[in-house]
Length: 243
Image (cartoon, rainbow, N blue to C red; front, side):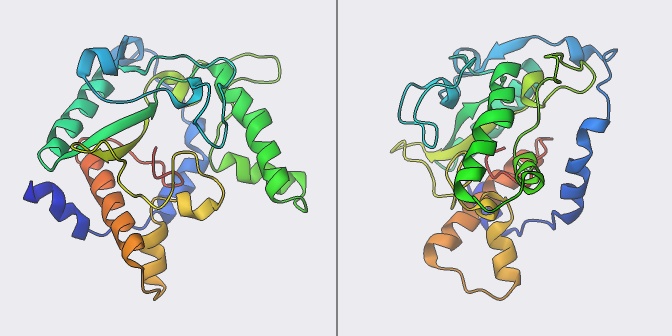
């Protein structure tokens, strides 16, 4: 228990270089000759007892969408080796009465393209009506990757991350109450872009801001989430606290 809670005091690293790497991450082709490229998908709820519900498949109660996304599926599927690592993280957190709650894992290409080409650009236009299209596109790319090209074809060497079954979106919750731990940003909350960045509160503190009690709690929980996953070989998307 002490081991996990001590992570609250472990500062997050500087993500500047990681963000630069992320920009060109899909330029590195997948090695289809590797055995893991043929690894099966497993249901993390049924097979590993990890809590969760596919956020994009809900018919309501999933802001900012408030409805089911076209092409979404009800199950939470992951590559087996990723699911096993996720299970290890979850079991370790349970010693501190913390548990994972998964929102999304394998994501069909149709969902990816709907969000990249339709929902997110429209949301940015609504929030920032004075932005030009190039800036809107840049904002969308901070959070979403296109699933297929203009002809609907998927590049097998460079698919979107979630469409590989190797990426997962999640938060943490209190095991006893089932209440989500405060992270300072809800899942897919893009209303204030930088608040979704994993290092948002770390950066505010480095600039001399005195954090409120709620912000301190959010920072501590982000640290626990980040370091728990890094120690099991996961990599965080620095622009999304939940990814």
